[in-house]
Length: 205
Length: 205
Image 1 (spheres, rainbow over the protein chains, first blue to last red):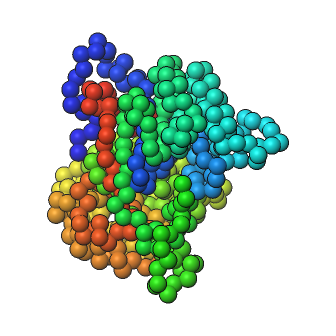
Image 2 (cartoon, rainbow over the protein chains, first blue to last red; image 1 turned 45 degrees about the vertical axis):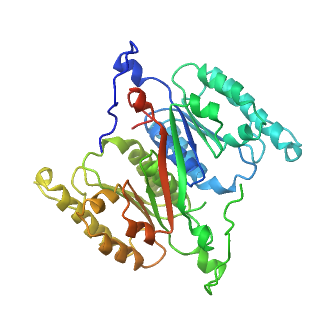
Image 3 (tube, rainbow over the protein chains, first blue to last red; image 1 turned 90 degrees about the vertical axis):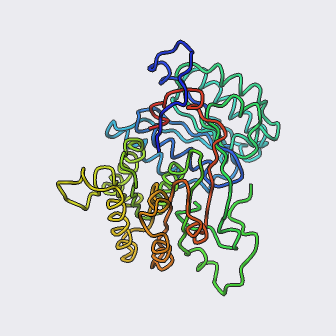
């Protein structure tokens, strides 16, 4: 199981150190489980490496990921209290984005909320506010045309510094896949829901 | 994106509550990234649900997962200090299993070490010592014939209580896939190593 060994050395004039500091754009897509879960697992590694983590959940109902949210926020508190790791932020569209203080969030249009989320993320990326972004289920507003994918890819290509971005969800647009460095497809082989089983606490949420 | 909705209701005589308490055996396999990462992401959910977590790494060189190890162990300390979440243990074959105190660990045969790991895990499963097990890269000693897969499947089928088990690695044996409730295949679409890029701190380890 050799890992970390490139299949070829590129003739790009970069030193190993420079190549080690290239920011990664990763996309976890496909119909199977584990797309978001793997992104949050990657966040553990980022946290341990001292990279500040910011999660943005593009879902209206956020109840299914409260476990990951609580655990990652607990790691953020570990950083505040001991200095280990790095800061962690978690923002979700489901209850209105935390930076939007409006009384009519419940009435806000989903597409409008998704665009507001991307506008804020684009601002943060341009300002290099975080080191490791998870844009969870961000492929859906792209797929549905709520957010312009060419604008997103341009903003990601031009992002300053060493910011890593992980995007999850089905139906990743082809132009996003082309722009990404690391694309993984999760395929369902077998799932307990197929056999009529219920979601399990600690497993499904 | 409906989640948690079974495609059919089984005629198994179980109540919804009973079906919610069925332990899950999950296998993350395939050639892509994210098999272990998704398992550690699942561990976040288990931790938050108060399920005690035990990770067993079946690799001789464990350096690649120190980020997840440090982060999950930090969550274990959060539990000790605040009561939030659940206990976390992390054991690895790479430096000799923690419960084996031998001076000649470095000389220990890999197959023998893998078998010693499984023997201890089987003991713990029979005693229901943990709630959520990650057997990381456990498919390899099964694939190589170091550990008898039929013995493993029998022990997993007979495991008492509500113990969840997640097994990761390529080449998952067919009999293990058949026994599993949830099987996900991770397929590589694109990987930066293909372009000769180096592993990134906080991303690859």
